[in-house]
Image 1 (tube, rainbow, N blue to C red):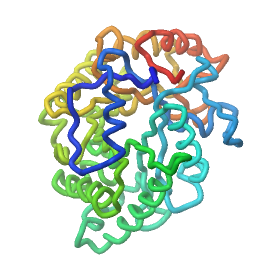
Image 2 (spheres, one colour):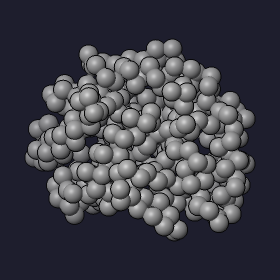
Image 3 (tube, rainbow, N blue to C red):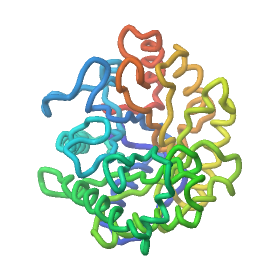
Image 4 (cartoon, rainbow, N blue to C red):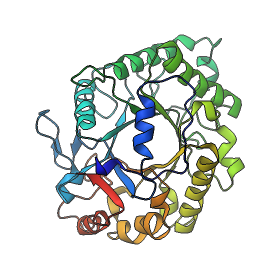
Length: 352
């Protein structure tokens, strides 16, 4: 369908495994590299401001409440896998059904992962001990990683269409590794350890578990200024299909500014082009949207005025937990009309 005719940075994609489903999604992502950039939203169908999903046949979305259209990219979090619900309270059964329904409507699902390792008490933000070295092959907690990857494989394998075909999805593990807030961040493991963790994760899921429907995304935080810095943690072309960046801070008054957002995205686009990969703005947004013109004054300048929309597959806004933590405005919020105006641009793609 038209809403998934997207821009990409290169004219080919590298997939290191003989997959069946993933190349079809890659082809869909890059079909028209001048059409526009897909809009995505984390947990878009699971909950929003003043509502929570209850019925599978009655879909809601805060994006739809504003635009009368759903986002094209649906973000989900696998943190808490193995429990009944994820770390944000989304039932994994609901997530499964909503991801399937999203696919059948023409949307694309992307899964990030804020893992609990060892036990439910050690979250992604617990940096009290160096975990990575213990969960790599040969480490004394390696089986804890295997257990979580097995649970992810079981979940991803359950994503089937009505005709029992696997649904291709984007998987974005171990993100923002060049920050210091996650236990796989730069202060808690070496680049070599991180690369080994990333490679093992992909090898185990694709080779050992046989998942042929995964597109792998690599997404550092905005803390880079050169290609060399961006690639410091890069596991290699054989392990990555999408080059991304997560950038919230540079939009703030304390950040590097809009031109820096553009420059960093251009670094991502350039590297993706060289490697035949897709480029994406894998996370961004303004929490609570205190700037009521953030979408038209800032995000539009980054994506539209710079013409990056021609080169970037998608942009993902973070989740709408409640009125104290949200990235898509709700009716009555000062940024509500601004968001509507932003999405009216023909180069911002929504699900029709």
